[in-house]
Image (cartoon, rainbow, N blue to C red; front, side):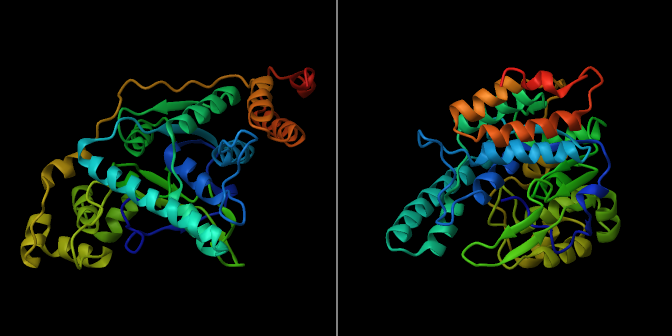
Length: 344
């Protein structure tokens, strides 16, 4: 879900071609969830192979990664690790909500309510350990690096940007800003025309570039105060937030009192969790200091075997995409593209 800072954060809408040709730390779970949610049949059913295994995440990951590379971007996917204790309750509640949505989607489909089935199927989308393993395997075949975070992927992605290993974080959520990421790109993995669920209408989704220093300057907040605003609204650690407090109200309260504790006192509210511990999860996130970013060679045969033979992708489409991908990489040692396809 992430923290909803949209109403108070200055954003710059950009075209993909306007983004710096640089490395981008992509929140892998966030991107894969987007692929699982968006890439579906008209009745809401995700893409499946002949064995009934979901392939929406692989379709999105493969083709979107190639699109990014063609634009001169170098994605580094960052995967979530263990669930932090503060987040376990929210994860359990998410599982329950998804199970409920899954049942409602099935019932709507049986009754012929396809718009409801589509919407509920999106809500029921769930990323499994098997899907994560498949995504990592595909990235390995493509030579794209990924980093395994000990806990929060967004926190680790922010660390990459802070360390100068990537230009920006890429995620739909604003949490990377709370983790201290200097730059955040939203809509990177879902930009383009998107169909609105249950409606025969499309919208244009464009990337948004957000600078942390501009956010702090525009709001007049310190980073700690920005975190406090997020906590008042609601984060993944306290998703309910506090009653009657939205983004604008939270901003006003923190600017007035300079402290979340005084803001809560004015409203007559008390936190049912350790506020300081939650603030520290953002200001001093548990990230790896010794991560490795390793770019590999393209294993075209591995990609072909994995996608086409194991998961029933069209070999013609995959080969065409691989041709584009290898051309975009533009490695000096690749004298001829024909050698990659000699075994096809």
